Structure formats: structure tokens, C-alpha cells
Length: 245
Image (cartoon, rainbow, N blue to C red; front, top):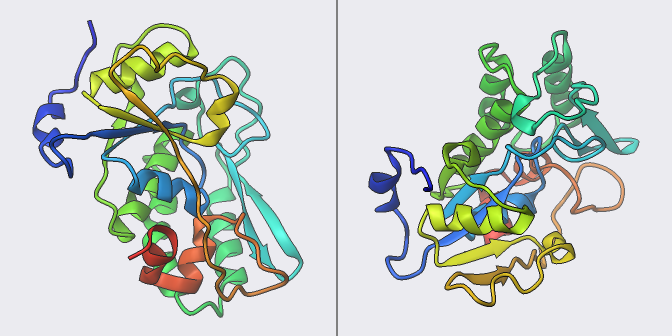
């Protein structure tokens, strides 16, 4: 039997549409790009899928910012963490928190909304009580979502006792929150086949953009940067850039 958190039923009343409940499911990423927040905003319920295995050289612990030398990775040095789920990955000790903030601050020092950005993200970097990569990513994502005016309800996959193969677990998570529609990123086309054809949950594919360009600090424009770039340059109007009016 699927387990539902105690707060679930009360929070579900906040969904934007009583007839259609859209659910999106994804691993937490480190200060992800704007498309990640577009996906969140397009759903009524977003489930952090951090019960799956951690993958190296991926977006869980790194992202790109714009610098005078072009795009640059900023990476949380969590190691390889073989056979660990994302939620089991511990944050490292050391000065990486301070270094990442300083790197962002230095490269966006003349951006029009650098003050907004640092006020938004600094408390999470400063919170030493956050011990895991999953918690760190999720806190940043939720905080940024609220700044962007996104009212989507967040859940963790660990709050539900779902079993099955790769696709069955996604379907069971949708059932757990009574979703009528599953909104999936396009990368899942590699492994989702006809599993949704015989069930009452509608499968929809997320379409990112097209996004307009905006004034970036350096070099040729790139959409493939962390949300910190978008907020530093656009502030609250980043919402319209990502989601539209």
C-alpha cells in the first residue's frame, strides 16, 4: 500500500485545478538552469526523486556560470559515492561553500540584481545544519522557486513507499499524489515506452522554451547556465523570462 505524508491531504487543496493534477518528478540538481524551474512551475506537485542512485559527472553537484573566460563549472566536491542514493550523499567539509559564493559574487559583481541573488542564496550556503547534497539542493530550489512566485507543492520520493521497475516507480509516485497527468522531461523518452497507454494517468512531455535572450555579462549568450545567471541579470522579471506572463 502506498504511504502518503500526513500533510499531504491538507496541502493538496492548494493545487491550482481540482480536475487536473499535474505531477513532475526529478532528481534534485545544484542551482539548476531555468528549464528546471519551468518544469516545476508547469506542475501542481513536484517530487524530488533523490531515492535513486547518485550519478557522477552529472547535474546533482555541479552547474555552469558565466565568467570573463566563458562558461565555468562550479562543483561541490562530494566524490564518486558509488552505490549511494542521491539522498545519502554527504556534503564535504572545507571551504567550498564560501568559495562558491565568492565565485558567484565576483563574476556577477556588476550584474544589476546581484544583491537580490546573494540575499536569496547566501542563507542556504551559511546553514551548516544542512548535511546532505539532497537537502542542500532542495532548499536552494524551493527558496528560488518561491522568489520566482512559483507555488507548486513539493514532496520527497522517500515519503512514499513505491516499488517496481524504473517506469513503474514513476507511475506509483503519480498514484500516491492522485495525479491525473505526469509531466516528464524529454530525456525520459529513452526509457518510457507505452507504460502510460493502459492507465488513467496522462503522459505529457515538457517542452522547454523557446526562451528569449537577455543581456549576459560576458561572451556569446548561452541558455545553458545556472539560474543564478538569470536572476543576477533579470531579478524578479526572471519569472516572465522563464514562464511567461
